[in-house]
Structures are given as structure tokens and as C-alpha cells.
Length: 209
Image (cartoon, rainbow, N blue to C red; front, side, top):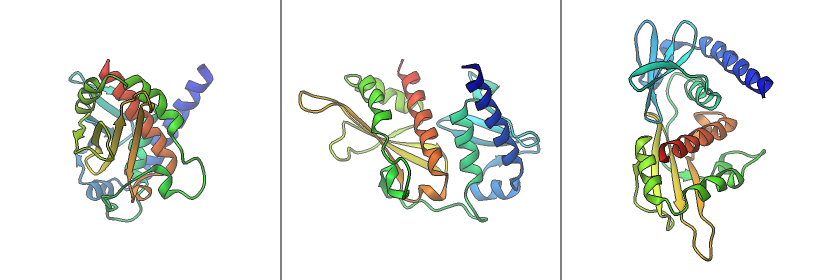
């Protein structure tokens, strides 16, 4: 357990160094970030965050106080969203939702096994899930594909994801699905979609308690 934790910490520190190699002024312009001499600022899943421009460290504002964030999924997602996109201009959203496997040719494309436990967790707790979505900045949408809940999350101001949830009944098990903009692979690495999905669902679980 300790070695795994140390390995994650090591990867976070490596990611800090990679972040510092990027042109921060270009990053500010590209994503319309607020910034001062010491920090870059952005909102991640409805949580104010800032990145130290000198050492790359990420802090979250929790309960009115800035605290260091070393959660692997959170920091790797933020770094990737800021550093992955090529060129001087931000990628363009296509505003077409699709499954994660749509924009990858090889590799693991199914996430049903991972989302099943969360579908079971929220089954029969639709109101709690709605409230949790709103705590994370989610905006409820008109139902899609017969889902009991459809919610769009601004992961950051420039990148959204869509969550759909179907409650279970005598015939079907509950189902939870995360959908992605069709141009997601211009915003982040395919692997990062799993970090982001896990982070979102873990935060929803916490917010629903």
C-alpha cells in the first residue's frame, strides 16, 4: 500500500515538472484563464483551483481555505487538460456526445464494469444523485434515451462531460453512462478519460452521502 502511494506521489511530481515545461502565457490565452504572477486559476468540477506558476503545485479551495491537492486523478486530469492540446488555440467542441470507445482505435473501450458499482449505489436514490450532481456544478438536461437523469458537467469552463442514469426495475439492472464530446481526443489523452470518470463518480458518491 505504501509503495503504491509513493508511486502515485512520484507521478504527480513528474507531472508538475512537465507542466512547468509548457508556455504558461500561451496556456492563459488559449483557455482564457485568470492569472497573476504567482498562480493560474481555474474551476474544476465546481471547485476553485489554482496552480503555482513556480513549482506547478495544485491547490483546491475547500471550506474557504486553499489546500494542496495531490489526488492522482484530479491533478493528472487538470494537467492534461491544460497541457495536451497542441497549437496556440483551444480545441473546438463538436457538441456531439459519444461513448469513450468512439475516439480510440485500440485499447480498453468499455467502462461498464467500473460504472456498475456506482449505478447500484445510486439505484433508488435518484433525488440524492440529482442533488450531488448540482453540488458538483452539474446542469440537469432534458432526458435523453429514456434516462431517468441526464446531467452535463463543466469539468472546467472549457470542457464538459455528460452523465446519464437509468434506475433499475424487475427487467433491467440500473445503468450509469458517461458520454464525451466527439472531439475529446483533442483535449486530453484517452487514458485521462478514465482518471476523470473515476474522479467525477467518486466526488458524486461523496456529495450524495
